[in-house]
Image 1 (tube, rainbow over the protein chains, first blue to last red):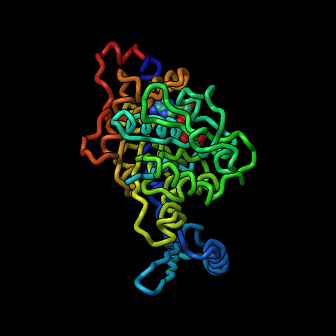
Image 2 (cartoon, rainbow over the protein chains, first blue to last red; image 1 turned 60 degrees about the horizontal axis):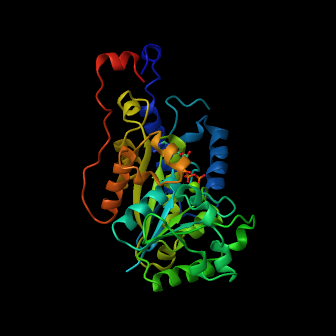
Image 3 (cartoon, rainbow over the protein chains, first blue to last red; image 1 turned 135 degrees about the vertical axis):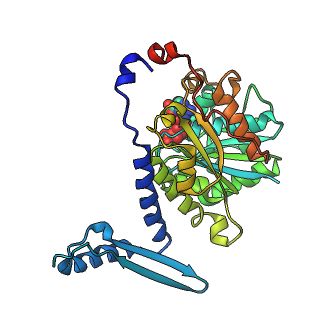
Length: 85
Length: 270
Ligand SMILES: Nc1ncnc2c1ncn2[C@@H]1O[C@H](COP(=O)(O)OP(=O)(O)OP(=O)(O)O)[C@@H](O)[C@H]1O
Ligand SMILES: [Mg+2]
């Protein structure tokens, strides 16, 4: 590392990368191997919810659990602190 | 028992071909009979990295289409007796490879006494990548410590557990290994780059090797000598360790910390 580089260090952003990956990888894994309509279902569901509550796109979490013999599709909607209808 | 190993990644340019060439050499130098096959149809490159580009007469597609025998198409390495290369064809017709064709080539290699078949996958998740992984017993997932590479390798892990013969037939599981490459201990130390631990935690996979970022890789490809053969290089040692682990050895990871430098070198040196 040269003198200039010493004073102009790149930002330590590795932890940001790790946190973002942790979330997106977990999200992509939950719907993997599930039916192809899951992303569309998630989007349409989000649209309906947003008619009533102002939530972020990432407030709707979908989880596909495979337990012996049957599958459970689970939706979680995180409501904002103080919901503005 | 022959083993089919796919070297794959999803994302392009992360080091699959570099890894295929070095792992194939490493195994062959330990006396194993090895074939390394370029699945990147239309973008032949493994021949250059192996340094045999001028000896390619027939390719993988020629064999499948019956234009020549497998023996005619296999290029014997000039440095290691038990190592053979099967080049990708330069045809633009990606349909030229078929599932049955690939199976036939593998069966013939196995009947011929090959112990390891290394499949250098093309980037992406399309047909070529699918064919390269379909018959695999094991997969080396090559990843760079960078967000898009890590995410893509997770997609590849998904495909390995659903779109391979083992998965479809319910016949066991493809054994998956993570190989982290272009690793910069200095940038990890300053918090600019994700560490082995970070990537391992996200993907939840055992790490078979960590290959440092090094200019030796470029000089090796310039010369057409797989970098594992440059024994002075840390990259070579890191690939050697990975090959040993592939064969079942337990070795600690090396080259995870930046080499210690003096004060002056730190202030003014490269
Ligand atoms: N450890 C390393 N240090 C420095 N450079 C590297 C390292 N490993 C690979 N590279 C460089 O990265 C580039 C891509 O490598 P390589 O061709 O092996 O990737 P690939 O995954 O096969 O690419 P593609 O997806 O196009 O097939 C090359 O220029 C290579 O020299
Ligand atoms: Mg390649």
